[in-house]
Image (tube, rainbow, N blue to C red):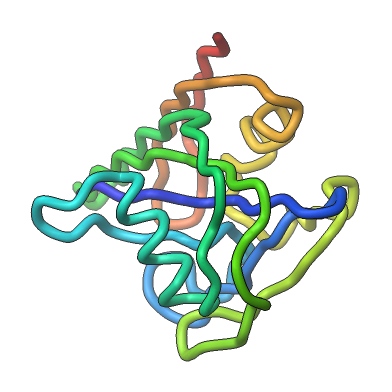
Amino acid sequence: MRASLCFIRREGQILMIRKKRGLGAGKINGPGGRLEPRETPLEAAIRETQEELCVTPLDLSERGELHFQFVDGLALHCVVFTAEGCLGEPQETDEAIPHWMAPSAIPYHDMWQDDQYWLPGMLEGKRFRGYFHFDEDKMLYHHIDWF
């Protein structure tokens, strides 16, 4: 499965969501989701952010890739983007509750276990490629290449 994530920055804060349904429901993350047929990761990042928060991210930049393998067989390749601002104000939808927060206030304890390993570096401007193995919510292995 292919997916994308988009982290919008504005005035020293980052836009996060509490996911309401699907993979990772209840967790804090950036907006994102699966690519549709013939859709690029960039197109998916914009579409998913529009669907989940009713805003359009601006000035997107590809920052990295996440490769997940789950014990149940699910394999996920996710391209991660940052955006510098957005058009509109984030709205709660059936999929997500928006939260603007300072990077120092990101609640890693409410997120996927892998996020604490790559998200701080990404927010500092580093590019990365991460590999993670999970058994449901439990991370079994991780490795990150920074460049």
